[in-house]
Length: 358
Ligand code: NAD
Ligand code: IPM
Ligand code: MN
Image (cartoon, rainbow, N blue to C red):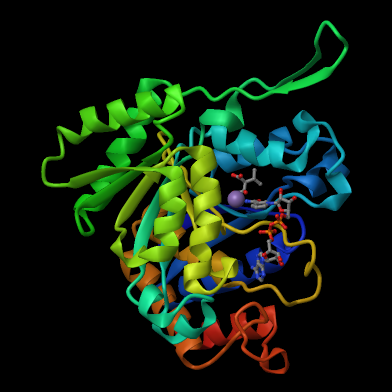
């Protein structure tokens, strides 16, 4: 019997609904494969502000750092939108990523055959979409030193700084090339090197790292073109590596190739051993509390946890196959249902996945 302690940070909005779904799936896997998973709940985000006065309380940070894996829902919501930057729910998420040095955010984008019609794009474009976004997660604009000040005329100015060190670019590029070696051997590095100095360092560093991976093909692409190519010929991508902000935006765009943001999982890995697994989507305040959220992104994030965090390949594949099966069997939450009256709830979708696991 393998024992694992999982830190569960449900967060806000639909976060608790989708993490409950993922826990239920993990419990089924534990039963089936004779593992023992212990779940420890922690506060993060807006609910942590309300309960503890801090978007990332010390207990949460410590418990997460000592766990074997962190399962996170989502943070944020209108209730906390007027707080200053340093006190917002999102600050809790950024801080846990930074404090655990979770610099490599892996966001797989795969079109399910049975969901092709859910994408707003033509079938010929989205068929065979299967790529991995490797998003740098602990640098760039997100971690610059934002300042607000008044100029000599008394006008208010806001400043965000975009800083990357060569060492930060090097380590994420290595992850991308290594991922490509296990896939189809192609990396597209996305930047804005025609304008940004940080992007020119990015490009130069990625080229340097590439010298050690001669078996991998490398292409550089400007981010505006990449946004277009994602729609024009998404099936041509294998691994896309990019900096923090571009990766955030391009991954939400890429989610629509699969039909919904509610399908995309992610794994944030770093240098400390513990990984954080969370859906790409946010707290979806517009549907929170209605049992309508698609739990598959969170469930697939749990699959990434058992695969990358616990090295349980069979178990991960079992979850992935169950997700494919419920979609093939026609289960559709509201975000992917062609007709609203045919949509299943969050809990019905979760139960279907659990049934498919048995
Ligand atoms: P969002 O991702 O929460 O929602 C965007 C749209 O997608 C909404 O219409 C929502 O209903 C839909 N959607 C998202 N997840 C879904 C799911 N699982 N099933 C069905 N539909 C789903 O983005 P937003 O509305 O721009 O942001 C809302 C809040 O979430 C903000 O406070 C933002 O900061 C936060 N956020 C948090 C994370 C995170 O915790 N990782 C990620 C993104 C946004
Ligand atoms: C995500 C989210 C976060 C990000 C926000 C909530 C800080 O959008 O995980 O994609 O931009 O990284
Ligand atoms: Mn995002």
